[in-house]
Length: 347
Image 1 (cartoon, rainbow, N blue to C red):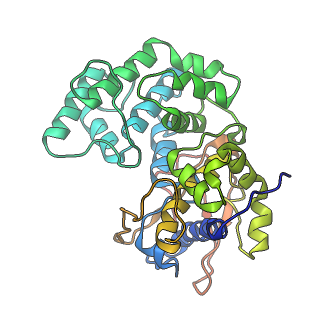
Image 2 (image 1 turned 180 degrees about the vertical axis):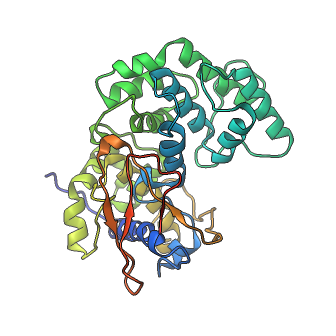
């Protein structure tokens, strides 16, 4: 195991953040009312989960877009649905499109009709893109960004990219195919690669390859002395290797995602989140982004039943007990994985 470079105080917070953010994830199953943490920063600001696949939008992608019962599981259809959903990355955009056009399908839905519905949404004052990613417009000569993105999808389908992706022999090869397309820089191309790898058309180990996004580079610069000079891929892989030791060293319980340890994509994401977290908790530690505030505050919503999580069936995350938090009724709760769980809830 490789030795770690010199670390800062933020490195310690990286592991504490990961453990507490995962604990919050489990506590929500047992106690929809909250509060779920005593960490004021976690309570007041929005952060993604420790595991990317457990985030709300990723869960919707897996459950409702990719694996929902009745959806066509053929190669072009899974690819088309995944890219159409992820380019906009907004659940309400997807649901509005399906409410107007029916079940979205490459075979039966015309992209011109999708464009008309998106035009209407914009005219009515609705946002159609998520704010999670910066989405540059690919240059296909269209007047509106969403029109260019639909042209991008059409180009991918006419190039038979789904078949080319399915024939690749590594996560990196799939990523490099996506990277060739306009408007997809390294960060977005890798995010889409991971999204496609959740589906039934790709079956690569997430540990095979990783690309560090701008947020992760900022986090690495805060966690390590001279972090901006380090190889980010090496650092991310070291975090994967070191995770059990680092959690144990700090006495932090970390059961993983129902037994699944952190993967490189998860450690990459946590670096992005710790970069934000440190703006509040460690403002004295500068990063490379120059940002000093967290824009998105957490707003408590009306308590409701939490849908049972669903993960790619190929991960083989079997039924596992989800324990209630300390002090609550310790009733047994179970989450179902690998099935259509739209109507299942953890009670």
